[in-house]
Every structure is written in C-alpha cells, then in structure tokens.
Image (cartoon, rainbow, N blue to C red; front, side, top):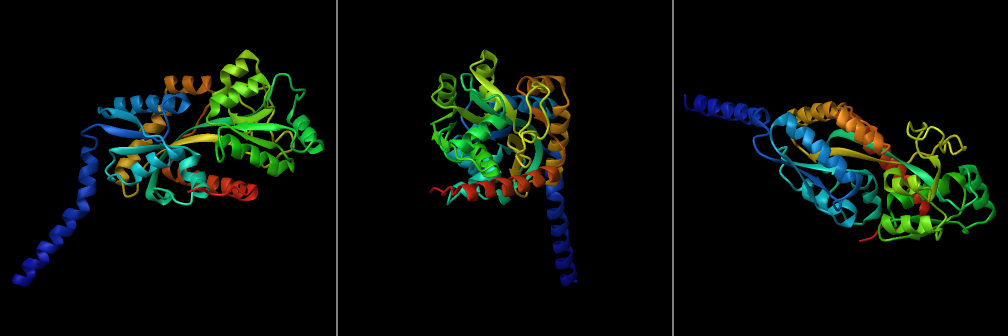
Length: 325
C-alpha cells in the first residue's frame, strides 16, 4: 500500500510539473512585459520597437515597455535577455548583429545565439549604394569599373569595423573583385556628414539612415541591395541588375525570447506580431522608411537567422576581419 501511495504521489508530481508551463501560459501576461533594445535610443530601431510594443499592449492589455540597453554592438542587451527567466516577460528586439555577425566579430560573447527562441520577424530595411552628388557615377557599373581601374582610390565610409555598412562594402568588394578603402567612423552621423561633403565617395548602408540626405539631393542612390526594386524608388536598379547576382544586404529586425520560453507564449506573440504588421499605422511607418514587413512563423525566423549567419560569416572570413575581445 505504501509503495502504491509513493507511486501515486510521484505520478501526481509529474502531471503537475507538466501542467505548469501550460498554466503559466494561460495567465500570461498578468504584468508588464519588457522589450529590450540592445542599442541606444533613437532612429528606426526605436520607432519600430515602440510601435510594435504599443500594438502588443493593445492586444494583451498589459504594458509592453521598451528598454534600451546599449553597448558592445548589442552584446550587452542580448546577454541580459539570454540570462533572464524564460517566462515571456523579457523579450529581445534583435538585428543581424546579435544573431548573425557578432559571433564572428567577438572572441567572447555574453550569450550564444542558441540561447534564444525566435518569435517573429518584424521588418526588413534595405541597404543601398549611395554616392556623393558631385561624383560622376550614375550606376553601380560605373563604380565597379572605376574601382577596378583605380584600386583603393575610392573611400567607402561606415560606422565602424564589423558594422552593417562595413560588411556591406566588403560583400560588394568580394563579389565584384574590387578594392575600396574603408573609412571607419564612430557612428553613422559622421559618415553621413562626410559623404554629403564629398570627403568620402560612397557608402552602402541602410536607407532610413540617409533619407534626409537623399531627399535634399546631397547624396545619390544608384543601386539597392535587395533582389527586387523598391516601391519608393522604382527607378533605382538593384545590384543584381548590375551583374552582382549574389548580392543581398539588408537590416532586418526580429523579436526573440530566452530559450525555454513556453511555446504557447511564443505562439501568442507570433500571432499578435503578424496581426500588428497588417495594421495601417505599421504599414504606413514602414512605407515611409522604405521598410518591408516580414512576419511569418518562428521557423521562418530561425531559417533567416541561419542563412544570414552563413552569408555574413563568409564575408567576414573573406575580408580577414579579426575578432576583438
């Protein structure tokens, strides 16, 4: 009888343990949820994060609070989320840095990409080949031809080694067999100033960062890094059209959570994000910024993470970029 009682208690404990995540998911969220943005406040990242947070708050009836935890190219914020409880109350808004490139650029990370579960892709913001207005280049073919005939004479700016702008130029050099001198700045603002002033000749960087310069005519967009032309700029060809058929460079954003976050919570968030991306306010914001809504399943996000890791890992290796401590 005693053994039967012990067996019954053990079985009851197993059942209760199995039901705990489900029970937690059924009551989630019953308090505010934090979305950690691992970069400084400002720019398209904050606009996107706060708009999505507002839509999620409206959906679930609890505040979704955006917190900026910048430092080390997103490593500090990502590490903070990875170490958080997997209960659905601490989420990460990430880009290619945290999940695709930082693992090749830093010898030690505060986290591993495998310590997260994907929730949903948010949006994709294309990169473009931009030149100073005084330059004679009217197409990517012009830039490629000049760079081949004049190695290292063109200066390409970026916001630092390993940044999206730097890696986008390295991919361009790798696929076109050209030599362009890298000029590193401490942030994108300084590179925008120097491109407008003609102190550097080109950048390959995120379109939203240069909208004011493009609109003012200080810089000229001559190619985009997507496979198809953009609705906002239908007359600007792609690098594919210029013969750089394997080129693809964008900045995407995604929502993720610590590994072992209950699947029901992940699914609820995924559905809510997909619904938010279809709302007029979100679509309008993305259209203004030349962004492309993504959405899809957590598996779709995982596939993109893996593809981007391979793509940028190959570029970093080819460029001989040495990881830092």
